[in-house]
Image (cartoon, rainbow, N blue to C red; front, side, top):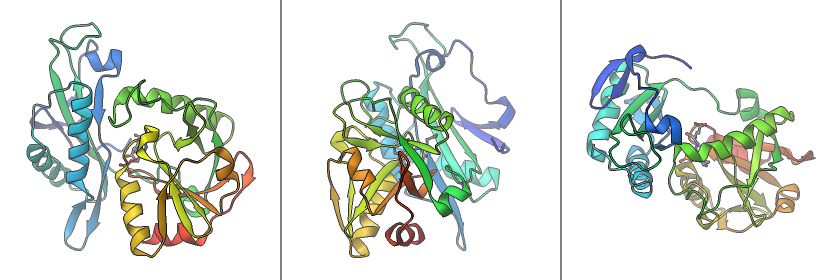
Length: 282
Ligand code: PPE
């Protein structure tokens, strides 16, 4: 992890090394946190945070699902994000806000626990590697199914959800693949452990509907809009694994990933196609 100077913690900028929590913190024991991943880009007009308001709205929604009362308004968190990025002086960075149940009572029930809020900003390169970004990644359908809407609702970007992702990514990497693709309990294509997914077939883009209990990705939404502007038809559609094997193109999207071509699924070569390249560039 690339350390920067400051972390915003419960209303104050503290030194990176001093942003500590107690080992008794609720979130450490029970995964009771919600978070965001946001990118800031250096532009001629200065640092520009991509769709910050949308990310903060999603954080509020995540908190609502987990009964977390956010002690800061989204306007306050927006100002805090700007203050932090300026203090760290690195325009091209990843921003990670997180709200979690802190140190109080050690029991699954959350009553009596304070809510801590932190924001980090630090440089983060290509999530699936520079080479993956260029030449495409190899993927494997995970043997782990994606958590369903009545297990942990993925409308909440909750830390605990990522144990499901961790199992899938780790299994895929240990088997020699770059990333996993996750299916729902019914066998429909859901998403990647940290990415949404798109399939291109005969010039039409398809992506699983939000009712697949996938994260409502902000990059996914951006791609739907950009692809539409470029003249492509985009559909939300239920897909099964052979839709991936027989696709013209497959790509994964997310804040950390941006747009990553999927060159193979379960050892079926798909290659990297022109629509993915065009969207990556746009
Ligand atoms: N699905 C999942 C499961 C997911 O984690 C992400 C983001 C997305 C879709 C894409 O959402 P959006 O960023 O709004 O376009 N994953 C974050 C990285 C997770 C990690 O820490 O690893 C991210 O891209 O920031």
